[in-house]
Length: 464
Picture (cartoon, one colour):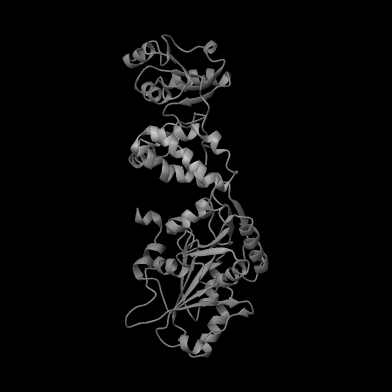
């Protein structure tokens, strides 16, 4: 992030703009939405600027900007559409310690003005670091359609009610009140007229003040394979409501970003044959935070019900009478097999698929290798990188064909996904040569579909 987004207090602040043409008009239409003291410097201003001065919306100076105009100014916009003049005025502003924006000159600007969706006092700012203004405008248009015009009045009424709502305890109690106001009670009242909203707010506040506090609860949430777009809507809602998020090592940073900023984030990552958080400690954290009344999300990679030690954690919260529910996620096998253009089952090939783990609490995990060694069997092997030679040995011992296809997918669904296509015979060697460091899933009996293999191996410049 090159530009950090903030909302600047502008009431009564002095904002200067040099220019009187189209670029100046575009900026002024936005700036006049603020309560700043606007000063425009233009020897030959457009008629609209003259009209805005007559209406008291700004102060017009029919002359060039000088150094004497800059003391006390908060922002300066160079909008003369003349590179030399803009640079000269920007230098004056820099010397006076005023933040500078030069219209259509990202490189020399100290700040940028985003595209804005205005539902005063609700304001949505959209920025693309100057890289894609067309995209910013498209997002703005989409949000303009989605956000009702009643959102502004609803927020203004809510803002005036905040002191009364402070009677509710800080944290979840207030969030529950405001969530119900903005997404249920408020819109219903607004439909009957603005005058009905405040009485509805008072009734709602009384209900929440006399309501028994919500008990602590644990949501066991499948975070999917890593791509945030593969996170379910139910999982996103759980993250949005969580007071505490207890998450695994393989949860991607993009998904963690979806949690509320105020949520307590606790990393309890486990790594096969490496540093791990004891399961007993994880269980204790779940109980501790839920008993304090928190809404807890236990965020597990993939699907929580697949090799996630879910039963142990459910037993722990059950033993303390704590409520819980499961939010399923897309397991790594589903994302990985999609990444190689295959399906887990296929008529005439395999009517079943095994989900196996490469190691368990006692070390390398044993399975029905004789059954798996038969032709056309398919297995998705989780946590199989370190156990590759063990798996190979067991399968070959039971008569598996050395030429059987094996595919290893690292970081399935993520931008840095890698695919290794090999055979049972070459698996340990090729895996070692690939030096995969991310989470990987191994498919025994599947190879990437030819078209997918070509696409992943073709350099981008050849596809251009």
